[in-house]
Image (cartoon, one colour):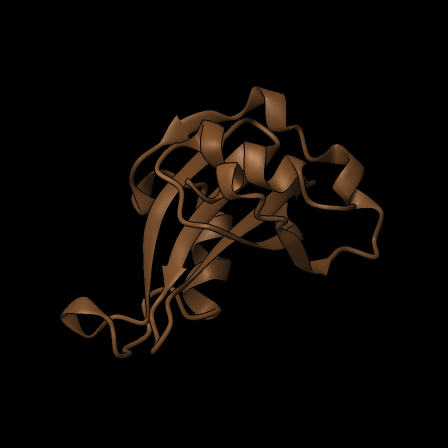
Length: 125
C-alpha cells in the first residue's frame, strides 16, 4: 500500500460550501459494489463519467474499487484508467434530500475502506 511508502495524498478539489465538516468518516460502513451507494451519489458519479467508455478493461473509463456509506455520508474510491492509472476518493454528504460532493482526493490504490480512510485522513484539509 502506498501509505507505507511515505505517499502524501492531496485533495484535488474541496467544497467551499462548508459542508465538509458534516462528512462523518467514523460512521461509514464498507461496501464492495457501486450499486450499494445511495442513488444520489450514483447519479452524480455516472454523470461525471463513472460509466463512460474509455481505454480500460472492457472499454471502461473508471472502475469502482471500494466505498463506504452511512445515513448522511458516503465515500467511493475508483480507478481512473489511462496510460498511467490514477486512483480517486470522493466524499459526499447528504444535504436535505441531495447528496453533495465535499472532497476529492488523489490517493494510491487501496483495497479496503479502512485503507481509503487512512489515505484521506493524511491529506491536508
